[in-house]
Length: 59
Ligand SMILES: [Zn+2]
Image (cartoon, rainbow, N blue to C red):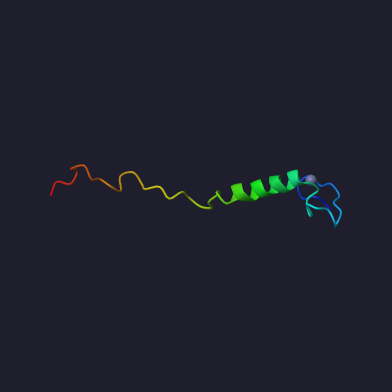
């Protein structure tokens, strides 16, 4: 088994298995956490011009 972060061989009975060390475990955790903030697709921002609410309506 190799550490998914640094590719170093890891023993099955390693305390931080499957990572070689706590450091690599935290790095992986950080990668996973930051990945949650990546939203696939366009951002949900309102289109400019869709809301003309400044007396632009002359009816
Ligand atoms: Zn590692």
